[in-house]
Length: 201
Image (cartoon, rainbow, N blue to C red; front, top):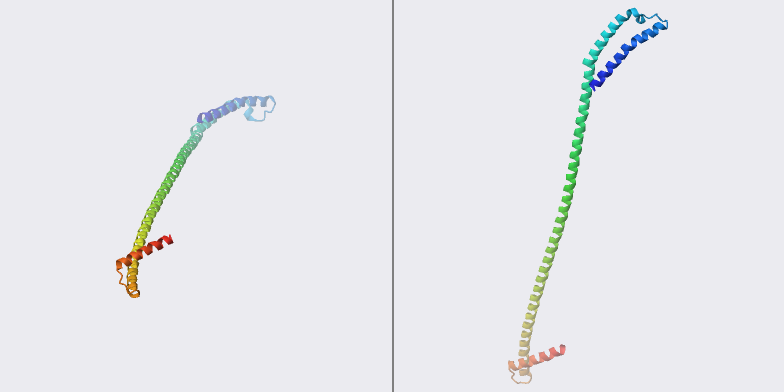
């Protein structure tokens, strides 16, 4: 960039230096000799001052302005390039983070699905086990209750038979005046009970 500016400035000054005699000759031929700078006798001094100012301007622009502009342009270009690189690096990091977040989200969703399925299965197993235990205990309690009821029935029937036997023997002794043994009365009561049970069945 610095070389391009330097070359352009030098080319412009050369063109001006080469064009000055042609312009002076054209003005002299046209008869307009009123301007002293177009007088050929003053050309050596004009060329001297032209060369002097050319060198001064060349040195000024070449040593001060152009390097400053070149450094500014290079600094700006470097600044923009660094920021572009940083932006590209941040964009790549953002893409990586986005990919990692998506992967983590998918893994979390998969893990959550597995845990939910495992929890549902565990709850189903516990519920089934609890229902089975409840059914078993219920059946055992029903069976024990039925046994107790049957035992109570048998005890009640035995007590009733004893009471009926005692009453029958006492009634036979009081009514008929015949002493009756409890064993005979008991056999009669049992036979009556069996007969009544058959009829009821």
